[in-house]
Length: 117
Image (cartoon, rainbow, N blue to C red):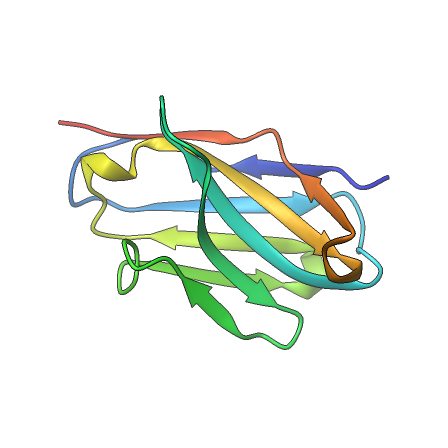
């Protein structure tokens, strides 16, 4: 079994930055991609950013140019650098590992991000 642990969330003012981390308990065999999702109160969970095994990245339109996903394979960790944060970015952020083409996925427990003055 693989555990994913997110960290780095917190309270930040609009325009500020946060860096989220997602650490896997071990390397993940047949990993296809790592993704960050978020879920705001009363809303559906949405895909924010993803990075494939080949290093290709993708972003939701709402975060393009502000968020950057990256990874450190040696540490089994993926990051989400969030800049120019807005109140609409307030949500619980979840890390997801996609394995075997999506047949298997692992989820972290989430980390709260609150953007408020």
